[in-house]
Figure 1 (cartoon, helix red, strand yellow):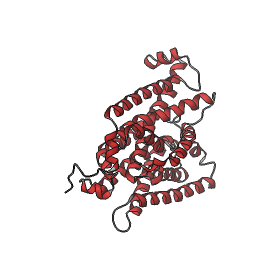
Figure 2: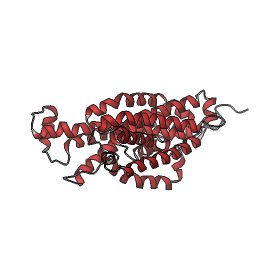
Figure 3: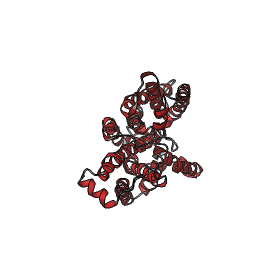
Figure 4: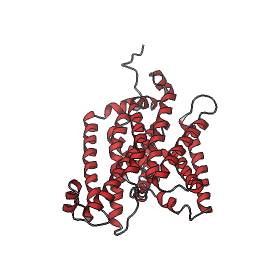
Length: 350
């Protein structure tokens, strides 16, 4: 007779036990320190050279000078937007990978980014929407509708929506919406000129009030994500195994997709989409956290702003007096990482 103690444990459970808690705690502490350093760099350096002494003097005691204007009008707002958008894209990516059990997935694979972009295209072309404030609600609405359509398509037939059907539905919807968006932009290039610039993935054109307008949605998405950590660990073992452990697979998947919609939809409205953050960062943190989704989500929330702000600082410095958008540099960094992930033997393991 086989007892619970003698029964072989699933690989995911064995890998979780092999990762010491001290190693995870140390990783969390290191990420916190690195994030603090990147925040300081983001405020200290930019396309407009300002002495460090003047920068930090005006951070705490603005004196109305040009340095104070640069710090509080340009650098502090984009740093705040970088934190919010990076955190949202990264956690959304970790959720998508956990829900679909696909280690090469990100929010774009479920059509969230494409839905947001298509809705903004409609807003610009039909309603004359301009600026981040106008984009926000169209982006969020498009993300919600696209996610609902993907889940409805994936749920057709017998049983619940499986990871495979969700991925296929998301890829198909993304292709369709991207084609329609491109067609509309080619029909009227002058109208969509500003939209094309927004779509590069910039954190420099957004103000703090714009970021605050979507922050409640992102905050709700984060709360849902952290609450789902334990259930996502069960789902990673497979639907049947998760059900035997008492986890509701359908409820977990629906809640996870809702969180992805809130996170990625809100962040896309702010920056126009920053590539590879949701794909790359969860993999990096998984190297020292193991497969425990609670730790992955927590560490991803810290590591993702590091990538976005780091890319933004590099873009400011290498192209002086101009700038390179953060979304361009994250793609440059992320493409080689994606190739490395595909080539790794264990890339499929979550």
